[in-house]
Image (tube, rainbow, N blue to C red; front, side, top):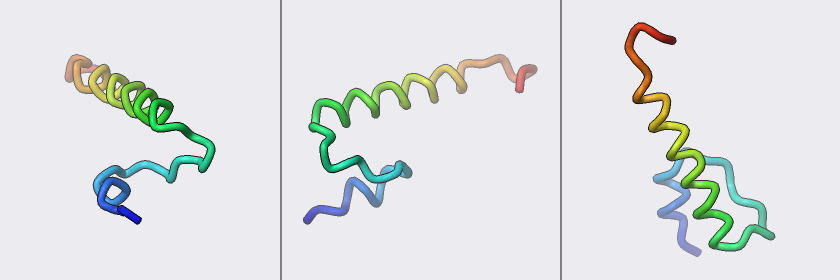
Length: 45
């Protein structure tokens, strides 16, 4: 088993039924949300 990805990503384990494509989609959704948070003006919390 490869645990390198799990060690690097601070995400809960994927359900066993999740296909690789679904995992990528979830990652992209989270990544986009993080980018939106980072782009907020510093005056907003």
